[in-house]
Image (cartoon, rainbow, N blue to C red; front, side, top):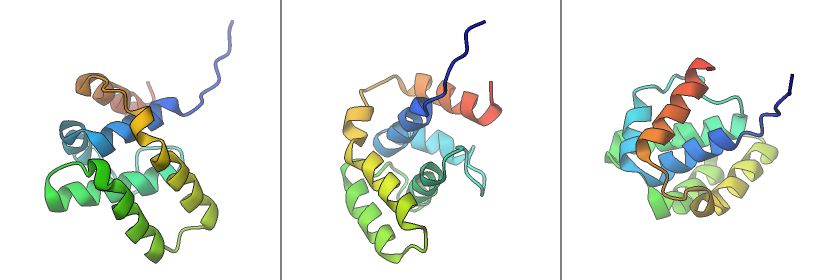
Length: 116
């Protein structure tokens, strides 16, 4: 039997969709739980930031995510390692988001939530 190594790329794709796609973020807001959806601390921090943004503005931050993150990072009590990991992801978010189908990204999010 082959063994697969999970590299977190599904989580990164879902997060990228949350940053760039209004529909994806709007649907994930309804799935979001206080502890987050991901197994990665920095991913949950970004996810929470995006969910809060959507609740206030009713859209995904898209290109303004950098400004949003910089403001958050200047006030957070999260560890420097977590902040650096989140920043590294956001630097490449436009590369990670390649215009995948919104529905496909939501299917990936559902798999993350259900573990299936």
